[in-house]
Length: 104
Image 1 (tube, rainbow, N blue to C red):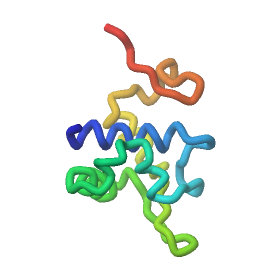
Image 2: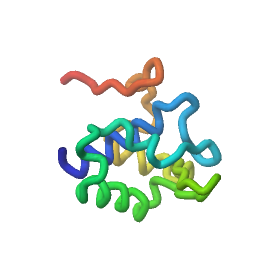
Image 3: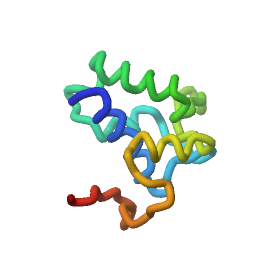
Image 4: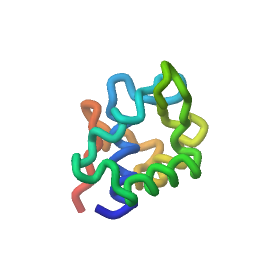
């Protein structure tokens, strides 16, 4: 798994939560990482991928109940969609709470 695919999975995971984790709606950081294979959660590749998402401003970090909580930055919504390769205005790829890639 390369860094870009890890970042894609993490961002899509936060979008697919019920309700989606934008802004004030947040979840614990370990819940965000549950989408990844168990053997790769603590690896350097995953840590650098998550750190880059923080540095890009795509993920907001806050301390709640002695745990780190994360949410997607609503001010960077267009940039996040662009990063994922999804048109911001095209919601046809988002169905039933999941993202589906177009078959070409």
